[in-house]
Image (cartoon, rainbow, N blue to C red; front, side, top):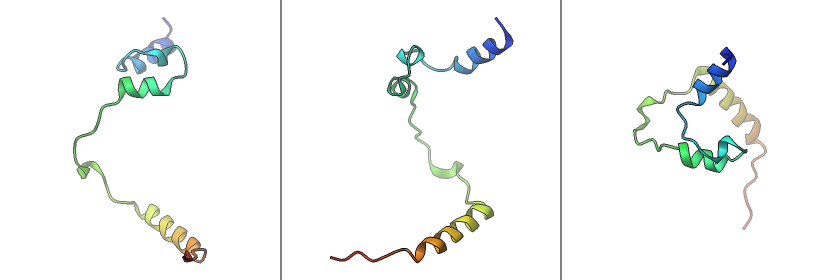
Length: 71
């Protein structure tokens, strides 16, 4: 087996077998390989300075386009 094929086989080794291996079947892949996360949000980090700056610019750019809904 070539190095490329060995690496490819190793990358997929931890996934459960299913129809997704023979055809494009996202539903089958997710159903066979999904594991719910039951932890909390402690692994998350806050937004970076760049992300915060981008959101600020985006909200400012979009705020003039906000029109109240009429009832």
